[in-house]
Image (tube, rainbow, N blue to C red; front, side, top):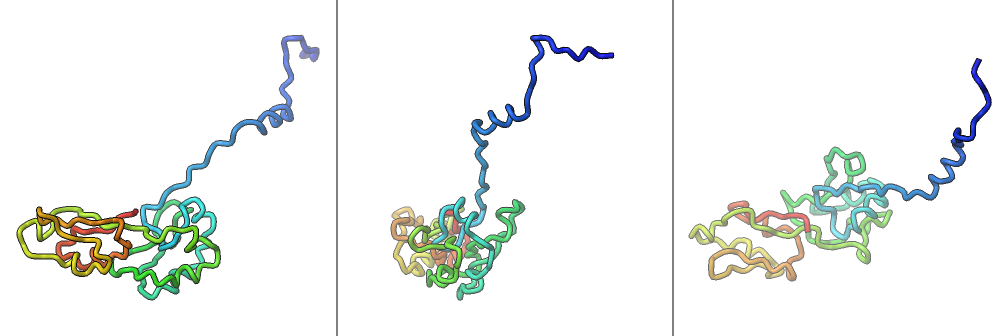
Length: 179
């Protein structure tokens, strides 16, 4: 038979004592993944957007330019969320997506209008010596001009992020990237 008497060296470990001290331990901070796609215009910051968006698709359904779609990302929290896709159209910032959003994930007051900016991903036709200024001509904000080196210069302070310049870029080196 085992001796049931305890010595002074033995200590009782009480589950309730452990639970008591766990309450004071700092919670590990959860990492919220960032989408590789841009959000719709006027989206609030990412963490708040993911908390507020109910995936009701009302913003997508109301977009007359059909530039809003659903994310195909693998992370469960990002999958199916609204994204801005300017591959085949541009955004005119009509605001119908914001008006349709019932949750506040899109907000003119708290959100960011411009979600993408144009960037050069290579040498354009003008840099190669061919005449081309389609991006400059199509930019209604006059945010693109050509420098002395025949390279397009983008003034981001004037750019709205509509995507029209990237659509009209003949050589497809002007691309829209997350802002």
